[in-house]
Length: 271
Image (cartoon, rainbow, N blue to C red; front, side, top):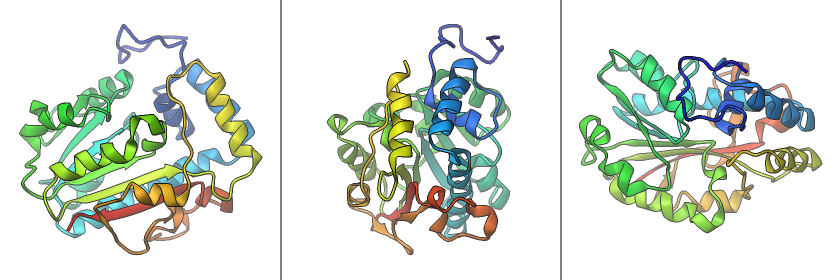
């Protein structure tokens, strides 16, 4: 396994990271043999997973365009992952150049690569942090420089909360971010579910459990995921399969119907 110049020296590239595995499933290049091996085993257990990753990425672009059209100019993307095509700042600033975006991720490779691509864009920054530290993130100087928390902010948590186990109180964590945001702020989330899924998903999660990754998935039902939107008013069409949230055409959907509902998606607004 070769170590690229963009890899921090303290990263053990023999240990898989779900952030880098997701990058691999999306066709990215910032991953290593350990990540690819886990990704291949997951996809072998659950064929079509690459399509589900693409569907989630398409939702990201739709929701950012939706929010920019409604006047949002500030985005806080927590669990942003490794940059790839169609990043939040690219989609938002293409519609409104004044948009400001703050990325947060705990994966050092994701942070290092983000820093590289953001050079020269003073309306975007990245913070190396874990979403379990709302106070630390919200007080970070980079957040304070870019975001005015007295004005509406779009909080994005896509494919990240299912990595937070119940004992870490994901609902409480979301509530702490919500309470720090101004009225009129938004919350967009996607979350893997076991609803309607078969043995393939169990086999895929077993692959992750057997890996040495510190990222371990917690599957939740629609009702449990809906509860994470407490304090936000869900906008139409509510909490739905990812591909069903205001699709713009066939490119927003997977050919495999079950991959369109593997992930729930929703967008809520704080009154």
